[in-house]
Length: 488
Image 1 (cartoon, rainbow, N blue to C red):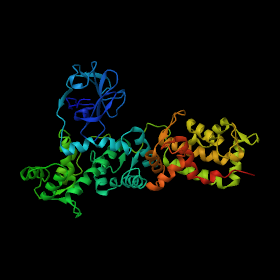
Image 2: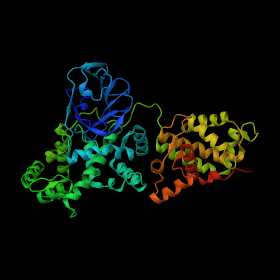
Image 3: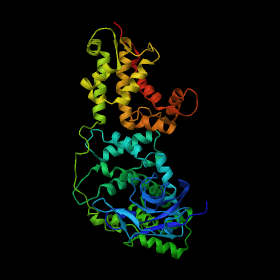
Image 4: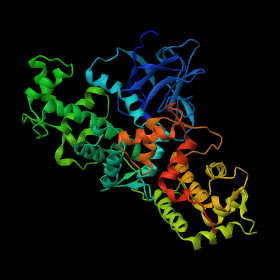
């Protein structure tokens, strides 16, 4: 494939004006066509739908939920050559032609900071902060009580746990960068809001990643003296290490662009603003207005509908707090023979010591509505009747009841965390996903321990475990008492 040019989108105002950006060519294709990614650290791509459109969207897919598109003639390899008008949804969400939107080519940028930006997408995807399904898992873990807002302490705890569990690399656990990312995410309307809301979560993750990357660079430039400042000499030498070789005059001019108060030293937040401008010079300068004018760090940076602690999108909403509370109830019931026999007698109302799938479903609906999820119920039921000590028939026997309770609970919890709704989907999990699942479900391990556990589940050594196998493994790990049979 020939080297693709960069693309520049301009002219969009109002709804989805964020598509205005410079897009650099990626070293990948989608539907056998080139792909471009925005310089700004946010998921924005230009790609071919595979049919007859060039699309701009936050994900590489079929373009069904894109922000803008243009009709592509046959054999089109570049949307800048398309002569038709770009289609965009207006405020009423109706798609209309926008003749002001233009796409033109530009030379790819060889700036080292721009090249750094172009390497980020695959890395961000690898640690689970790009795909929608990964974002859901992290948010559900973070928003423990389900009120759609989280605090700085909760965010910090999440970062520590993900790093401890090997899901995130250690360099992402850095307090100055985390604080910078947090502040940049929450600043809005001067309402004094100290919370990160659900719709801000993706921005928070991108900020955490980006500012930690910049912190690594800043530390390499500013040295190890810990003062979080760099002078002209450190700046010049550091840029040389990064491949930006400037003569003394050029270095001084660049440094003065950052050192706006002419104090001879540059702070980390000022360095962040400088790099952002290098990467995306067309970005809204108000984004870093709190850096440029330090005494106004609380000024309004973006409009918001106001702080909302609740969300109206769900009639009933599950959260980790609900699962933790029910887990205590389930485990307490298993340890109390009287309660356990009472529960069995409730489900086995005719006293024949076997129960059907329909009777199990009835128990969940009436007594444990949190576990009323049919795909998870079916998987838990099958795992029980085909278990190591099971009779391998279509009934759950009395001695299998403790195993059934544990499977019902943990299969439901893991299905909810992973938003697994397709009962016939044979999901497979590699080692990285295995580590991520352990961390998100509150069971972080060291790299060595996680790998040892993975090999125990991956019995054929193929490097892949089935989602059901993980559910069974986690059930036994979290609730070993379920392996003991209920006997009179």
